[in-house]
Image (spheres, rainbow, N blue to C red):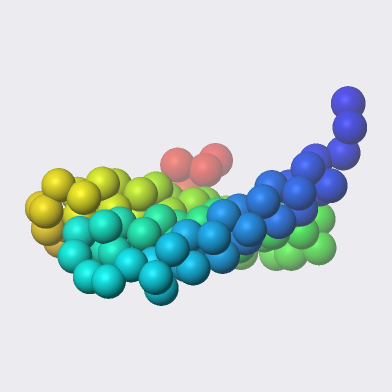
Length: 116
């Protein structure tokens, strides 16, 4: 089986390229719901790139950083995709809805029986 880090670094580079492309489209978009969508998805792609990098560096990082940081970052990126879709429909995405999955993950990781 091939080593995962090269694939994770490639995933990070692709997500970073997507983030730059979406950010450029966001910059050119005047205003409105499409601009909110592009902004949320650009930030989501940046978080995917950060998460992939954290997972690629897993052997060199503390386990708590990988478990909380890597998984929390990817969860937040998923909620930003959802927020972008809500923006496209003109619906709000409350901050508590964006942060709730990450906070639930952090709370679950604080329970020893969860990761035992």
